[in-house]
Length: 366
Ligand code: PMP
Image 1 (tube, rainbow, N blue to C red):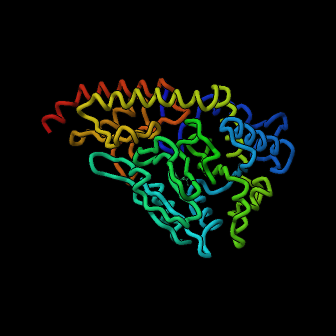
Image 2 (cartoon, protein in one colour):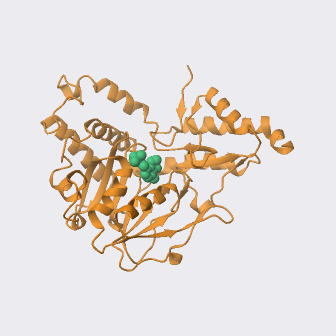
Image 3 (cartoon, rainbow, N blue to C red):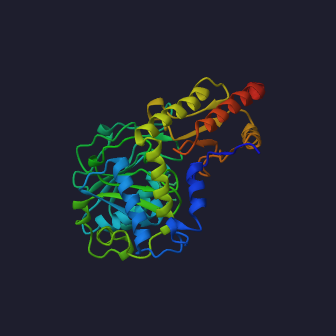
């Protein structure tokens, strides 16, 4: 059987050695004779796993001591409501920079709970781009400024950390975490759902400046309360033990590969291969202005009538799966997270070139 490469945006492919280690340990976790999903969450073995996950993350992301690392339920969407529940209301509001589907979802949820200003920063003329920071009309009183580092649906990303004089930065890094080094001290809160670069769905990793933990509102549901979560080492209730275990195994793999800088270099290389095909093509089209292209989620359209379904079907026959675009956007999308081997992108690039040669006449005549 040929290898299968999975380009889905999330839940995403995991590194093969991580899956194999999980399988090996599944029935006997660390010599206990029990599976990790049976172990007591406050017991020595699972506590060790949780602490290892945290210290690996601290090491890999160089998280300073004055930041807490929380493991919370509810994926990234859970954070969309936890942020306003914890920090907004009673006269406090926030700015939300909207650059695509997920940042808009975050703003929409926050608006249900508090006063929020939306800054529509996605420009659509001459390709998709992000309006420069000087054009954002920010509220000087805003408690925080929320943005999404990499828009998974549109494949548009911030080239760096936005340069804003006002507002403490809160960032959704769900699809880009661990894919390039980040200066944590620039953020008040940084969060990432685990299902792409951190393991499996359901868990959300939150990195929060400790002084912010003390700013939370009084009446926050226990499970959503950052202060309580920090105080109780992410065990306000039974934590998502399997997801935390997978995170630990995955972070160990990232470390073994050489860390975030190595992940970054690989990411640049993979994206270079794919954009190389797109840029030299008459059949495929990516709408994002170069400076804002995501290296992680690469969406494109196929210009010939009826070719998209054929492309997806033929890709599947070549072991290339998960390429259908998000339901709101259509088209094709290839997600290139840390776990995607170079061989996967190379096979996709080769398939795309070959498909173009075979079908370009249909585009030209259609
Ligand atoms: N933010 C971004 C940038 C995402 O890509 C996603 C998931 N695709 C989410 C938030 C939502 O994540 P979850 O499904 O874990 O709530």
